[in-house]
Length: 268
Image 1 (cartoon, rainbow, N blue to C red):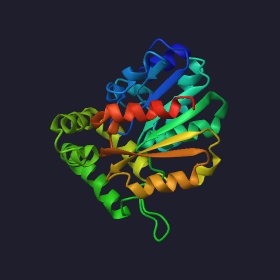
Image 2: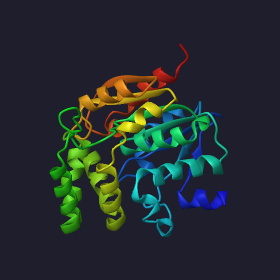
Image 3: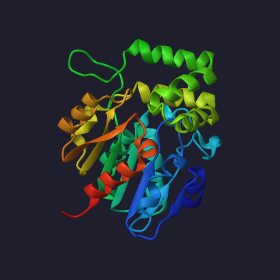
Image 4: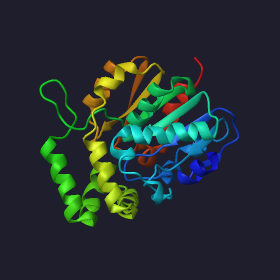
């Protein structure tokens, strides 16, 4: 059973340390997006990288629409991997929607985790006036999903630059766009709906594990106010605003991202 899970999620284990550090990718991506950051931790940690079912090189036949109809199904992927590898004291590093996926996993099984690191997270992408600003109106998301249905490649070419947010790094934008394009369009459409319509605000106070919130100085997907909101509502959280811009600092500013994570994990 354990081996099946490792194959299902295309799990890779590396590094020379003993404490596990589990990297979780965001929507439309895969574990390869961590290649600029993960090696910085290989000397001190046991690194675990994987692909959610339906992403990257995971086993697509394992995709179950009912299971992955909300973020809890993806959180179960994380817990399945932790059980298969018998992981404890995990440092979880999650990008974008994986921040809330990791939060759900840690609420369900807090004893498995030591720290959570959220990279460009958001508990809700849609504005909820007058008390919450997520960055998008509901009609924006509905139009985005409609574009996915009508012109998937066009959608990918539109969203890639918006997410990466670094026009001076066209190679990264091209890579992200290609990643969107290489994902099964039906599964990607479902994951997009689950991601952009998710609302985890009520879950935030239930997290008991210390966490680091990494917020970019400019991010169209998760604006600065979102990081502030998380910090106010997540107990035992630390907020660090990066100089990096865009939604993917682990790709566009890996040195700064790695440094701030190391500073957070270093003993006082």
